[in-house]
Figure 1 (cartoon, helix red, strand yellow):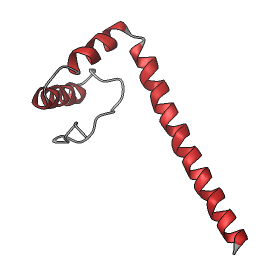
Figure 2 (figure 1 turned 90 degrees about the horizontal axis):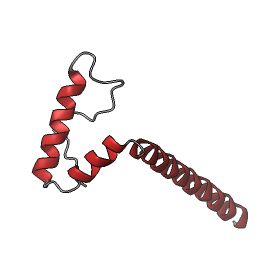
Figure 3 (figure 1 turned 180 degrees about the horizontal axis):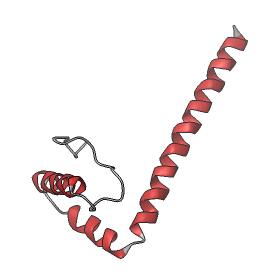
Length: 85
């Protein structure tokens, strides 16, 4: 019984560690993109928008991504996704 509990706890610890690593990776990616002054300015301006304004920005960026030569890679979520939690 004790061995099973320890094994389960070790598995849970490993899963929690993986989640933490993924979160740190995401934060590092964000920080790297925020070094770009244009990205930082845009993020600050977007943070002041209403949910409707934010959705308009998301829709516009999705439109730009669909245009040839406008996106380096496809990163967007499907259209009509609510960007607010």
